[in-house]
Image (cartoon, rainbow, N blue to C red; front, side, top):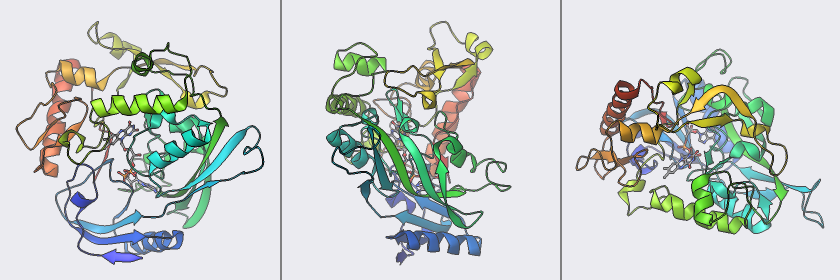
Length: 376
Ligand SMILES: Cc1cc2nc3c(=O)[nH]c(=O)nc-3n(C[C@H](O)[C@H](O)[C@H](O)COP(=O)(O)OP(=O)(O)OC[C@H]3O[C@@H](n4cnc5c(N)ncnc54)[C@H](O)[C@@H]3O)c2cc1C
């Protein structure tokens, strides 16, 4: 276990903001993670278990607690028999610290279907179930089978099955422990929730073809119709091309990628609230992707709810690409949904910009935008 008192959160987060850390631990084994977490909990110190730092907005002030970074890697095929499959599928165990995009690349190489559209998302595998990461019509909920966690309340390791995770759009039971005492067993946790993910289990179908393409922009890029399937490697290529065009692949030289990705979730509204939006505002069905059980199966529509586009609302409220420039914090020049650090931004600059955008959208459309990253 490497312990240091010098590191700053700005060195560990993709927004590159954040103050000094009182205690920083790099944990290279499961035992080291659990020891560091227990020590922080015993001392009553704030605890931040950090992966890639791609979904946090740190504060400029010194973090008077313990930051634990899981530096372990490892991906294990759980059923390598002659056919390389189990019950017609594949099972993969990944330690939490493993960078997520390595898992996508392995799955495509092994012809395991279902995460190809999640190419290029930064961060660790352990963080993916927390907000049920998703992109281009896919969510990690569709291939997760279970997670093994350290339960900070019961102070023991636990296996959490897929149905217990209650995964929804950028949401999970684990994430809700950050805000809800009910989900957290009587206590609100944070900035890391009640459950520290130790490793993640996936269950894949075998196919060199992708899952059916659900996202219209991706289908157009691939020159196929929505619902068609193409080689997964082509999906990866197209997704990475689309993401690069929006500044959504990390690139140290490109300030448009000094962000936490999409800063606000797409609002899910009641039918009545959605009807009050301008006629040309996007309106999408809300679908439960966790309920898909077969290739090509349609996710059932969740009745009474309508999803709209946060980017459309922001843009039409007058916050266009690059808004805020030449200031230190500005909207990305490629994508209005990313709040970016142009080089010298502080956490206060990012928060002020986020507040301004939220207020502008609320004034223009009566919709409350919800930030996606975890605020420290
Ligand atoms: C350029 C860019 C593009 C992005 N694109 C997408 C996208 O397309 N789709 C999408 O869903 N997200 C996207 N994101 C957001 C982010 O990459 C994901 O949410 C990612 O899963 C966060 O992983 P991380 O390891 O960086 O988490 P961190 O930022 O390190 O942590 C985020 C939260 O998760 C908790 N956490 C991390 N690891 C663990 C663990 N092992 N156990 C318990 N809690 C843990 C932290 O404590 C914290 O509360 C993007 C971000 C950026 C910067």
